[in-house]
Amino acid sequence: MTRLRNTAGGAIALLGAIAAGVPSANAQSSDPAWLDQLSEQLASEQDCAVDYYLNIRESELAGRHTFEARAQCRDGRQFDASLTEPAEAFTIKECGVQVC
Image 1 (tube, rainbow, N blue to C red):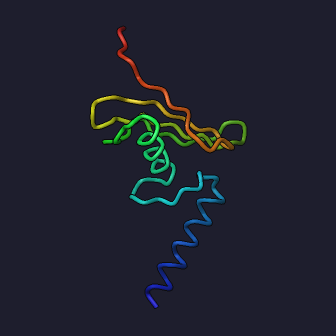
Image 2 (image 1 turned 180 degrees about the vertical axis):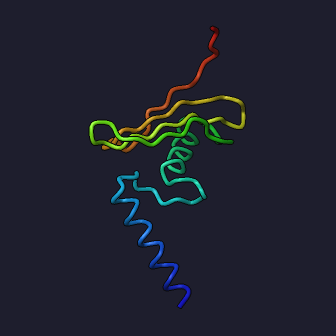
């Protein structure tokens, strides 16, 4: 019976995420599913093992959901990433040294 409840709860959470327009990756951590998706994309495209995220934002622009975050890799590099639906992949840019 507990197994059924967990399955039903997971299905309800997944339907809620789909209705909210969150990119269709299932969360595999305590982070939102879109951060898990970003971690996977950074690992495959930039060889970045994400240590943590900064400036995490979810918003809406012209009726479309947007997702933005800065990722700190374990090797010290940082990347800015953004996604505006209906895009399925994040746009990723490496942060360079900035001098003010």
